[in-house]
Length: 162
Ligand code: PNS
Image (cartoon, rainbow, N blue to C red):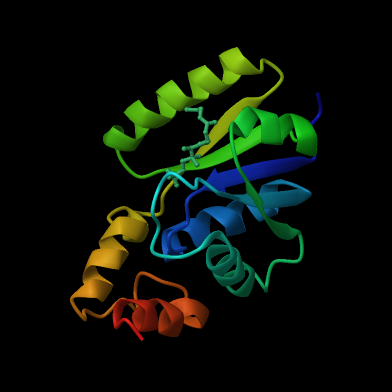
């Protein structure tokens, strides 16, 4: 299968500058990038799926070939349905590699027509994760270096319980 578009799946709770860097680079490599937010009702998130999608939409407004979507259930089923052949994921550390290696193998065993490709983080984003952002925001810390400018206010507001 020739892949003109890729899927970048994740929780994005919330989107970080590291995610946006991966999306920008994928957008230069593929005709279309579909950013797919996992909708998992079993896991409590800080932001609803719609809020996470809206924040991604805002942060990706400068990228004309990026679409934001959501999925539930298995990623491979979403891939089959969307006709995409490539999963893009970012790698920040050896720890990420362990997890991603297993996930990629599992996905490929479930659906051999897909491949996963990995983009190494830019060093300035290597320590950033959504969970760290939530923690810093919860204690009133400065998240401006970690979260795209257009969504900072929304993240801060959520953690002020407004
Ligand atoms: O941002 P995250 O939380 O690291 O993203 C993980 C995600 C959403 C890509 C992964 O959990 C996923 O694909 N979940 C869907 C369920 C699935 O397909 N599981 C089998 C592969 S391990």
